Length: 330
Image (cartoon, rainbow, N blue to C red; front, side):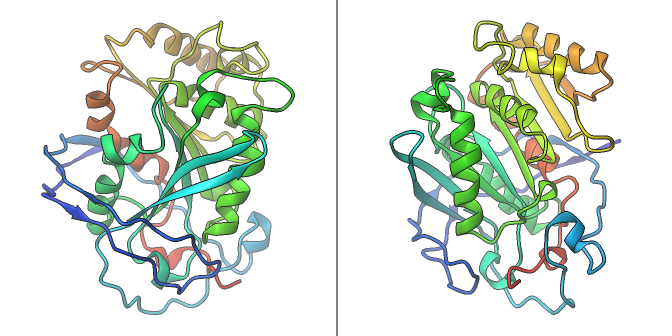
């Protein structure tokens, strides 16, 4: 079942000038930014949410997160999240890697462990694509304000040459950077829900290639995977790394298949290989979550018109009330 939501027009979004130091661990300095919306988001299809209870004292240890303490009133009137410009000192890259982090409204005041999504850009794009071009933070602010989207942290890295060149040599790959450096950095720096249930990964075009490559090779890390016009090609990598090959071999533990979102426009040149990938998964009884949209192309207007759907998918099983999240104080 699907529902249609019409999102309100946001004439401008002025993000807060700094972070309150109310949550442990402390967060890096923020660079405030102001973004102006020049067009109204289109009407979008939002998947029906499935309610999943938050961790309890009886189940907290089993899923690797602290239990939720007794509920108290939340004194916070923030309506906008914050976007931070950050740098990871990478040994894999042998240099700095830039990334952006979106923190939802009232992140500091709640002192809760938020779920997070790693969102990767398309080829030759950078850490600003999801915010500056797709307006993901505006969609989240709007959706959270009416309890239509779950509050979450977005992590948006700049993949640089490692991501664009599909390098798989001597452990120096985008996969190894994300798994061994970015995820630990994020979970040290922010109050995140550090369990499979609290992590998701996705990407646009080449970023979608990497989302499936990483998640299919590390099936214990993510509860949801999204590929938005993912660029699959038999020549991109060998079968041990290429999602087209991994789709034939990936194995999930019983009852632990991640949720998958796979979408592409009808006239997208990438569609043929996306559908090969989809048929391979479906043939192995793995739900590919496939949507072929009748209009659009391999372009920003297509992705921006569906960004609310993407965010609804990632947060589909996450609480909409932050006070239902695990505490950050344990």
